[in-house]
Length: 532
Image (cartoon, rainbow, N blue to C red; front, side, top):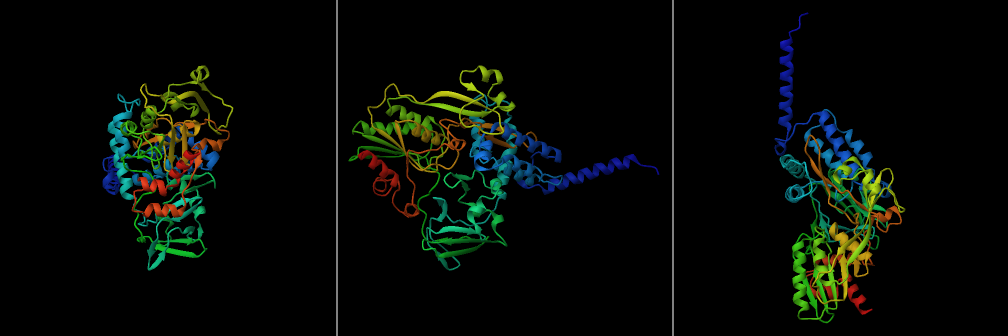
């Protein structure tokens, strides 16, 4: 039998053409123009992602040892989902789940705003990161926009709050003619304990940066009900109870939401504004400042407003309210505190990083520099993370250095904090707890804290997916591995569900003088301490 080679070659070319055309036709509009990945490229791409996270993140080793979250197990399981039939949209979701599995607020895919900042400030010549082509970032914008536009989950909004180990609804609501009062405790989801649902291992892939309840040693998420997979036959079944143990059953369709019976006037969470609020309490001689973000120019604002008051009035104490402040630049609070404090605020730090090929190149270190360096070591006497080689940095760090011309002030400085602080705000909280000059009041945030450093900006070789990873973990003053979580507070004050309801629904200015004096439990603690 005679074989026509030209015919075979033509057939193969046509087959490849139609296969490529079919793949292109299936590609969503948002992903047009992105790299076409082969099966082997997807595998290599994912392997690169996992390798980078393992080389850079010490948090994944902490999570496994303390929280029982096994990043490596998740990564292997997700890699097996990549097949020769895997489409780009499917692959993007696998990548997202893999990054989520690191369970760290500073380890995530880059969103557009953060990527814009990275291009402007992080990359050389303005920053320290070299070797990244900004043209490659164009693909990532498309990936992000696709993931956002395609994630259409249930419409339900319940306004749940997790406090003292339980979920409660902040606002009363109605559904299908039945009313549900505020403050109900959520017991079950689909007839299973809600805590068991949230602590299921798969949640570590689909819910990024689950909060950690140290008291009850479990994770939580106040918006878990937005996951479509929880809706069995397009219905979610939630069981609540009131204080008298009366049960309330909510069976809600995936397409529906509830009708709130009261208006949410005040958000309980991270602050999105940049409006600095300041007051002077004449009787108490207190200067109060609400700092919503850690932006250096807001530090300048605090200095100007403090000067305007102290030029005319006596100031006995200062209250710096950082509740809801998600962080930014340490320079913000340093600008203000350097003008009102006469003492240098220093802490003897003990920090840890993974000793890996990537970190050696990025931080320009090797075995010799660690062994010979004055502030470096491969060993420490305190707690250690398992299954990872680390090196440690020991240094005395000056957080706040007094200005050459400080204001005449020698009173107490109180830091008000809630669970919604992170990054540089968490650094301020840590500083307050470790020094006598600042007094912290409030809640402990349920995200890993301590002293962090600039994140590592990374990308996968074939898809050009950009992501960031936190490279540092704080061992300062730690006696056990669990202590690495940091985030302590000197005077612990938490909110009752009744106060949170009133705070949410009140028409008063919750950062106004009257509300602070009469109702705010954290500000009241300041008044109590001032009388001692």
